[in-house]
Length: 524
Image (cartoon, helix red, strand yellow):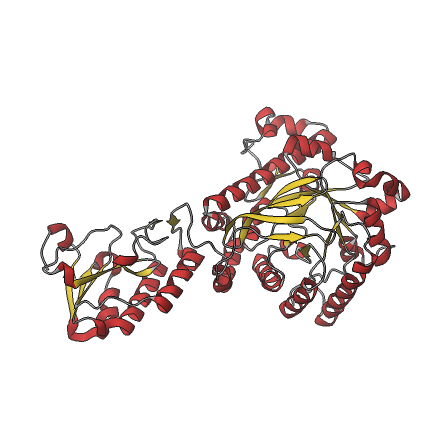
């Protein structure tokens, strides 16, 4: 099933809120339209504490290109009360760009309860008029029993239904969080239910504790379960995810928005973010970064700065690193190489690599939304590349749609170059190349993407060999009867005995010829 490149979703009050501009896998670059301007996604919303702003929102916008921030409506209610209603949340924060508000769910997760009800906080958000507001959900968390998880799901769904009747400001888009935690069946059921309601975007709840404990494979299950049951055209926000090391994987699963206070919290703890890890200042021998902070200050200057100044410098660096990573992710999507980028990023930590391998369980679903052609070549970077959407799609279509021509001779050529063997009767021979990880590649399909645009290491790994041999065996099982003679140009240096063994099923039809005969120009 091929999807349109551009999808619009309307706000209840009229107008479009989200347009998809580019796709790669489930990752997408889009435009979120709000009352205070457009936002390019995927993006991070820096968390703004309304009572303790280390970096003012306007500075975030001018110095870092931040297009959307998030603040807590519950904290705003406690700190500003009626004043925020009179001035609006934009006036209160002295910020004229798009703002999203959370409603206190994180405080419930941490402290068990807050001193405000679900109707009050919905009406308060309507009154302070953020661009995007969130209902008061009950986070499941990862330590909840199934009974408690079911309770959080039911309560949150009931609140989501009731909130629709409390809303009165047509300029505010509303976010309906998805709960259920590590109970995938509850996540699936609730995502389906809330997806039927009038919400413009959805936030996937309860990932923070999983992220803090490096349980990235479970994040994959949580996000992919929700994505499979939410409306495809709606924005998806992954609560609390903001470290650069997880962003590429999350975007590849279809997440559009992220929020995090880590840039400040880490700075207060003297921690320095990189795109793949976090380091303490005393672990650094130099500043391994090209951002403005790291080029204009030395490590020694940052260490010796006043505590409040050091926090600001580190917070700014952490934001530069995070938004730099997001720009790289967007560029990778536009170029059609997001999956390559994710593979490279996930090799930064064994738990991330484990998460990438967990994502392979969803490869058939992801393939449905991946563009059928891309502007960049397919690059094989390791065994995980064999699970990419392009490989999955090719295998499916070859099995479902392909029939070989009726020619008497089949020539199997395990070469990456378009070398043709010198044949006594070339017009009577069907040439099929063996190219891992795609497997069997008939010559008439060689110009179809990605078969005409690939870079694959010729020193083969086990996954390349296994996938190709399996494809060859399936091909011969289905189509060996089409041919009277089967020529295998064998390359035991790279393939060992695997190709000969796979061809054993054709019996006396098989003739094994050294691959080196191609270079010698021997006629066969």
